[in-house]
Length: 261
Image (cartoon, rainbow, N blue to C red):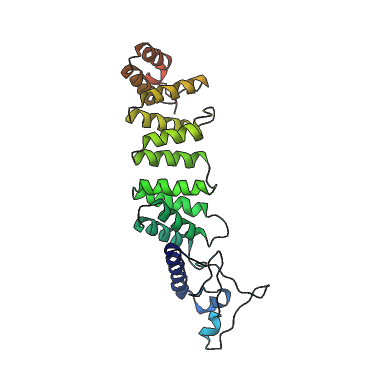
């Protein structure tokens, strides 16, 4: 079966990590552990041919079999979650900048998991954000969404922020329109404030005032004066001075010390 270079590399590295890691366990724990061999089948499981305990005892090595008579072990099962996340982050930082390469590495990384490792992916995203690898963050989130995973308001907010930091405000606007802005009744103000800031910084003033008017249509009051000030400035730059005065008067309490926490 054909295996891509990325897949082969990840299989080899996860196997090596697993073999190195088990050396730190006491010999008393060997009976409860099994170890991946270098020769593995492509797919979520891989076969091993020896019992490590027998090898340590100097006895002829015997295969361990499951109920079906075939021994199955997942590649990298002896590697901790932290090590797997670090391995993924390092791989994504070193890999060439192409969608095919990134998606291939991610596919290979999750191939050995029984369930989609959403928590590990989230940790990897946070690590990439700390490195300010915004383009890679966008790629990982889009890959995750293509798998039908992490389709939450928080994920889309994280994607929009990464797109903004990657200087892709227009694309962030399209994501907002398709995935979030259709029902502003339940969108957290944190995300609305984020999008208003993106519009403001990128001189997308018409989109800014439209978003604010849509929020007002749901009778949603802005929680802080900075939002109102950006809206008022946008109206002024668009030449809509009456609208500017209307907004400042309507939310005057936010400027007089009665601002909501």
